[in-house]
Image (cartoon, rainbow, N blue to C red):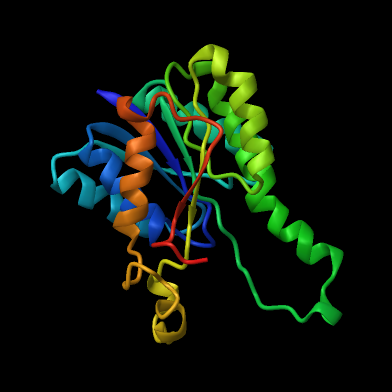
Length: 221
């Protein structure tokens, strides 16, 4: 059985896109390591859903913005599930709206923790044991292209999946009408749409796709 690591460093638990991607990769036959930071019950709920469908998954605690914790949880996952073949970086922290006149450097650093530091720590942690692919959501396309060039000779692919607005639990009650009016395909995207793209990039069918930013937004400008 192939292994996947779905590290989700959301504020509390893997949910929304992370949970759907984890379930899809498990359905594709990968054993999935589901990461959480504080809500063990939430992560174990995702694992239970995967196992109920006949898939393999385990939950692992750890803050993927912390170097020591990241290395430790990757090592624990490898011991339990074997070396990583697929890495899905889905780390997203709080994104409070801040007026430009109130924006501080710390606000920028808070975002860099999830969108730059976390992907870097995870790639460095899983790289020694990798034998197939990386599907990494990184903050900057340039970083993805650099890693793709550097890791390509080892048969490792690196891509960014860039969703449009995909409503999940935290968007409950938000009016979708204005956004939907600008989507050429005429519907809102779903977590399953994003999971399908990740599934392709992690599959043999996506083995020759690397250094790309794959936009999943129904044509929204």
